[in-house]
Image 1 (tube, rainbow, N blue to C red):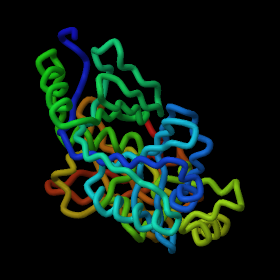
Image 2: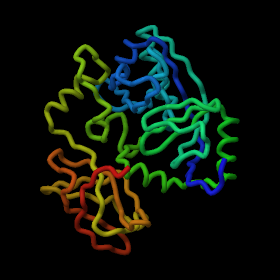
Image 3: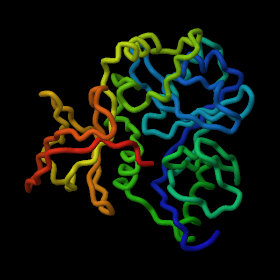
Image 4: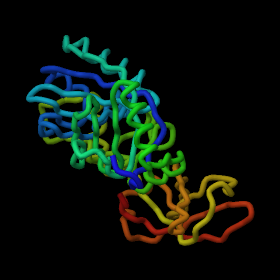
Length: 303
């Protein structure tokens, strides 16, 4: 390993990996994305929904062989997601294996010559899994190996990132978070997850498809957007959630971050489908002490 590396590590966390062998019909029922389209070695984020189209989980699905897949669960509700996977698997007599691992998210290139996964791909090396999710990467493996790698990277010059930094990256990538943009009543259509839905095969009736597809066809749902405020302000000074105000309706932001290097303040908000990237929209911001900010710009994801 080299020194003075440009690498930011985020706190270690539990990671669950579920392995599925030959479970094509099972995964076609469980997941909104068509796993048959994932190339070997590739990874894509999918959606698990309930019967009403609400989001139960966002597993990263890796294709490790012709009919072999891994579902990577790194969120705080991994236990609930695993329980749902097993509940659905019973109906298909699918064999689901489980590995309880440890992992950490990171930004930057690892100073390890053997490890360089392409975007949306998983690489197995050094006895670990490395997943490039596009906007951030995940290292996962046995606890001792992950701890050793993490500590060695710090010793080589990597730095530890704070949660606020992780949140800013997530918001810039227009990525939803459980408890903020996502719960069991949230639709993928309204949380920036449209790309995780695949309606192309009429025979693939995944859980939640009927209502979600009908909602998409009706075109009356909201769409999650990233907005940058005209005036930078500190979110810690807010006394209530900022809103985007369109035709007499106020739409509250669900996540917000200040980027000192900009400097500017950005956030995520669900807006009507008619609002497009590049539009300037009126807003209401209440801070103490007061700042005057009356509009924001709808921008595309930045990562």
